[in-house]
Figure 1 (tube, rainbow, N blue to C red):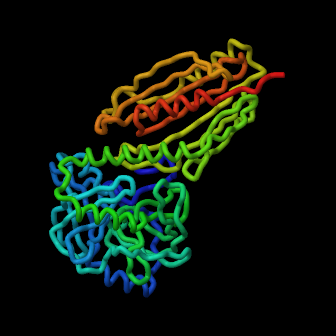
Figure 2 (cartoon, helix red, strand yellow):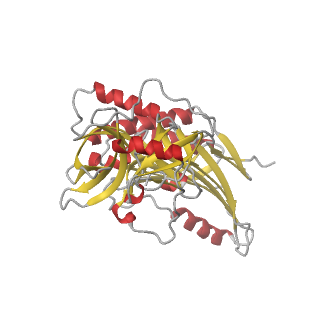
Figure 3 (spheres, rainbow, N blue to C red):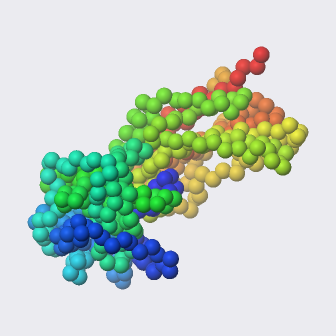
Length: 434
């Protein structure tokens, strides 16, 4: 699920197997009179969207969506429709409305960068949900109301507060402190007077009532693109690939505009990027009972693009780890450092999403620090011109210290992957000894 490994987030698109009842499930609070009025007016234009296996017509995942105006266009999340977009020979879409009516779904457009999609269904809306050019201005603390089909249990509404725009994502998301659950992906988030403020997209697994909405301005932009397009794309993989290219260019521009900062792992200085998107953390073993100690700096981009249940991309992570020992001899420490350096996974040969990783190894020096460097790259099979890069580097200037660096960059062009690897090889250094 998108962001799971980066922000401890879960998307609200529920797998079919996730619809089992939980003994310790928390009951939602009784909706206020405002929520009840909103739900009564809006429920006819809310739908559940299902991804079904063509062979057998069994559901694979479920989410939510809402009809725009009096037309037959439904807004939802890209991740709700991702199986249909990427594997149309295997999956087909179906909608179910609050009256139990079912029908086919036709995918019209996707916006992977903002996790949105527009589909066409076989019925019209009643005109409750509209996305005009002039959008609502939100004030922190005001109430918002989220609608959808939680856990495939039935249509519902929950309420909470708007608490600003999250800057850790590339494109900004609204923080909603309200109880929403899996299966509500793609449902609308409304103001008290019924204006669309955003679209349900994810929540934190490690927090209480910390959820996120895609801002409605991106919905407006996507609907305009749908109105302007002359025909439905024949191959959405090409559309997704182009959007991933756009994201990696944006990611590289942001990194280029962020000055490198340096962390002290004495006697070394190591480069990192710290920004709204990239956060750093430190840890150490304090030697404890072991015959060596380590200090570690780990930095990671706190967002990534959801492509499918198995693939998230457009991300960078950085790890610097200093191993050192006064108890081990040079030979024993060399064995320890070598094992640490070699015990790294860079993807297997059986993963059909990528080509097998190709690696090169060299001993290099930037004039400030000699290192053993390994650079590995693998290509995306479905998305030409996109690659994952892994750089491993270990200092070779000391018998009882080893500075080990790992930089993982996903979903970038070949040139940009090399560019990032070069930056980290050129910038690490050691203090000059008096």
